[in-house]
Length: 114
Image (cartoon, rainbow, N blue to C red):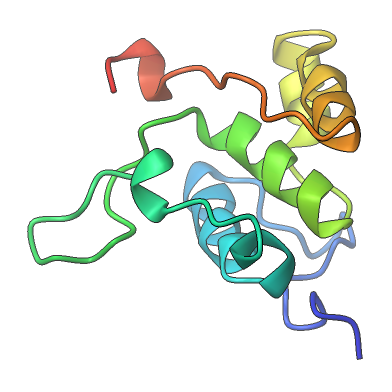
C-alpha cells in the first residue's frame, strides 16, 4: 500500500481546497515517511501553538507549502491549480525545485513575518 493511501482523496469532487482543508493536508503530508526523511523540523513551517502543539499557525503560505509537500510525497497537489491562478508559474517553480533536490524559499503566511 502506498505511504500516501491515508491522505484525503485527490478527486476534484471530494477535495477540500479551503484554507482549513489545505492546512490539514499539510499536516497530513508532513507526517508521511517521505517528508519525515527530509529531517525538516515543524518549526521551519509552523509556529508552536500556546498549548505546545507543534502544528500551530503557519509561518509560510499554506498553498505553497502544500505544493512543496505534495511534490516531495509524489502525490497530486490540491493547491497547485489555485496557486497557479493567483501567481502564474509559482507552483511549477516549487515542484521543479523539489525535483532538482532544492528547497525553495516560500512566502510568509499572509505576507507577514516569520
